[in-house]
Image: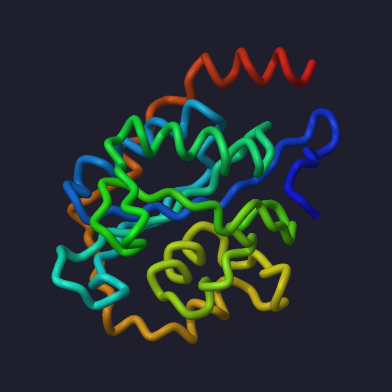
Length: 195
C-alpha cells in the first residue's frame, strides 16, 4: 500500500508520531505538540524520555516522546506536507551529510492505523520500534494494547523487552501541559470534511 488511501467517510485516522529533539528540547517538543494539534485531536501524549545520541556522537542527549493524533489527513499528507512544514517552522535544518546531526525537532510517523506503508524512504510501521527503547517505551504509554501490524506483538510486550538502561524519565518536561484546548480550527475543518 502506498499510503494515499484515507479511511471511509466519517472515520478518522490514528497516527502514532515520535517526537525527538536535542537542541532546546524543552522549548521545541511542546511547540511541536501545539503545532500538531492544529491538524487533528491529540488523543494521548507519552512522558518525555532522555537518551544519548544513537550514533554515540559528541552532542547533547535527545529528549523523546510520542503522541497519538486522530486526524482526517492521510499518511502521505502528514509525511510529505504537514510534518516537514512543522519541522521547518520549528527551525529544523537537515544536514544531507549527517543524518544524526543535532536537531531542534524531529517528527516521524511510526504507526498509522493498522497499516503497512512505504512513503518514499519511510516505512510504516517504523522498523526500529523493536530495537529503539526511546520509540518503544513512549509508544507503549500511548496504547499498550495496540497490536503491531508487522510482528503481531502488543506495544506493551515490545516495551517490556526493551533495554531501558539508557533512558531517563524527564518529568520536568510535561507535554500534557502543552496541549491546547482542542481548537475550533480543527473542529471547523472536521465538520467541512465529514458532514
